[in-house]
Image (cartoon, rainbow, N blue to C red; front, side, top):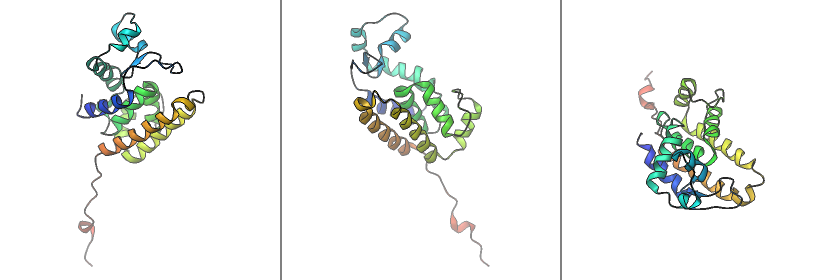
Length: 185
């Protein structure tokens, strides 16, 4: 795990909040962003809504690290891009996060973050890459017409905040000293 994970996790947890079981949320019973179905998958046995409600931050953090951060290969991504991809994986799904990144990096969107994708992301300028990535996230949210009236404003706020947080983490581009390139004639 690289140094970005704690910051990315803190970001996600501030938007995922505590226990909820909204009737329109297809995730159903959720705590700290972890759905009942995900908790069943991770624990390997059936869990109740009370088990979801009792989920600790420590267990949620481990699930996030293993099932989202590591699964999205965030350690291999530049600072800032890692947060954006992680947040997308948590909120919109791992497959979408990978495909949106590939589309933003202008490589085949096969959902596999292999050497071609990682090289394209490493070579890309972070700010335009993040703009394209976030635009694809927004388009996906917009496609959820039935859910957008209920959740759309919150998704939009989260998206804007994720973009801002990601940009804060981007390594500044160091330009060559302009004076060093000028020659006296």
